Image 1: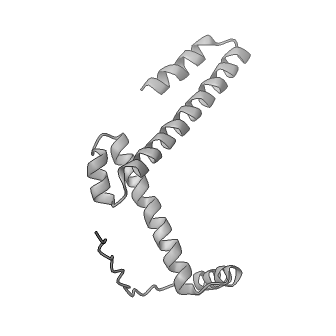
Image 2 (image 1 turned 135 degrees about the horizontal axis):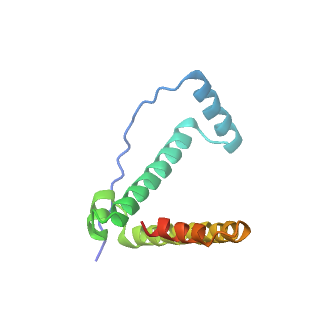
Image 3 (image 1 turned 90 degrees about the vertical axis):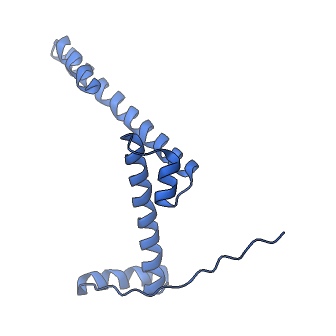
Length: 125
């Protein structure tokens, strides 16, 4: 059984840059020893993928779409979206823990236990 070859058709687009933006692009290309076309293609596809992933995570966390729906909409696979969701939740939990630790320190320093309870309540809302 042979796999059908995927034809990667090249599409040409044009981009208008201000002179400062073009100079920045040229500097980057010189440093990376690459063409402007290759550099822009790389940057654009990397950014587009990141934006699609952020969209998928946001929509999933907000309960607006299932993983399979998001995979279809974004073109990303389900495990990739799941991994990004897990990383986002881990970052959120880390930030919450740091917030509570700071609130606890302030509450103790000012002898105001209600301040810590207010922080806990704020996270629940």
